[in-house]
Length: 187
Image 1 (cartoon, helix red, strand yellow):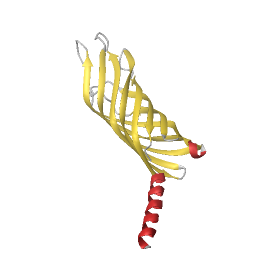
Image 2 (cartoon, one colour):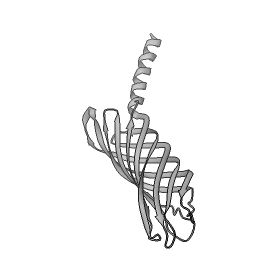
Image 3 (cartoon, helix red, strand yellow):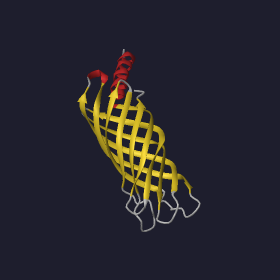
Image 4 (spheres, helix red, strand yellow):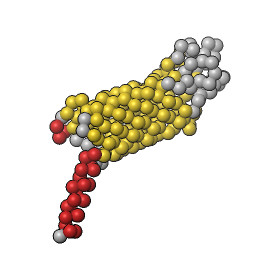
């Protein structure tokens, strides 16, 4: 009888824990823009990212952690120097805090969130025959966005505003990233 009681208790605990935490893979597309007044011209680029997330649900609020690999593209040019195109890739970590603003019943919910993002660019490729502009490898950012959960799918839009000056010289170079991600919750 004790074994049956503990087996039933374990089943309820696992089900309750599954409602409390969720995890799964996540894929994203992004548009990276340059925020700077120190360059003659700037252009945005599109690229992708992938990784995973873990979410802790607490009634109307939730916390989420994400890790992955992200790629970004953009270009800048200085006065009298040809355009430099950048392709950046590296580790990406995000911490989010959010609120479920519109419940959709058992179907899901609509969410709003804000948080912190850190990128470590381990792969920096430049295309330029003249001077290249060196970049700092670490980028700290803040973000805000909205998302919707439908069944086991998560769809998020977020704007990631860089707070780190990526140009180690006297010029100012920050990134602004519009990101759309699609995830799948295993639990």
